Length: 251
Image 1: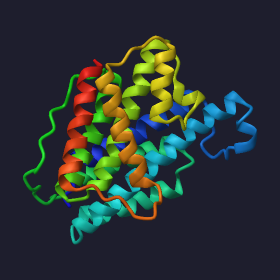
Image 2 (image 1 turned 180 degrees about the vertical axis):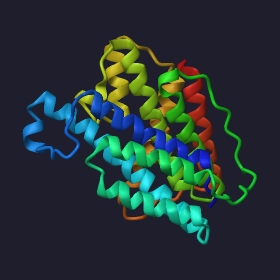
Image 3 (image 1 turned 45 degrees about the horizontal axis):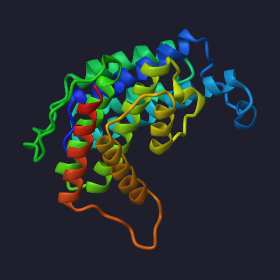
Image 4 (image 1 turned 90 degrees about the vertical axis):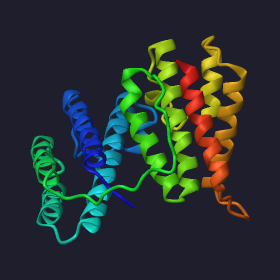
């Protein structure tokens, strides 16, 4: 596997954006959400969503830094990355301090000599998408490409489902002005399609079938079965092409 400055910067930006939202909304980052209470309290649910998003971004960046440190071991800048991350973990309840340390991580990372990336075995043409979701989907498509090139076809398939969720959530927001993630954070692709139909948002029947195909493979991949489903290279390639095709037809 190969890691680049772009991968790291994407995850740093996501964490910074998450911290900015938490600060803007005045959420206490050290607060523990009471799941039972938040079910009946919209404010609690909303805070829980932003805190959960922060945790996800935080853990994604932690994994990225650990992978880079392993891939680039022996380099002083890579060692410094790990030391800075330890400081972040100690100060994670202080958004201002965390953002300062993230800037230092960006500076140190710029001095790392990353291994030269291999030529990709898969070409994905980025479709035209709304600005609000373009960066997230681009990052996911790049990760899908890495998984495919490394022969990790099941992970590539599962990520296709995540890409579709992002796109459909945006489609719903454009039609209603409502962020359905705040109301139903665990809603599935099938239910999202049904919700869109309720709001008179029509999707091409072919797109709907493609979404169902990708979703079914994804569910079959992540849920325990008597016999695990491992997509072949050809199957994963087809699903990726279906996913990009769906995105291109939505806008």
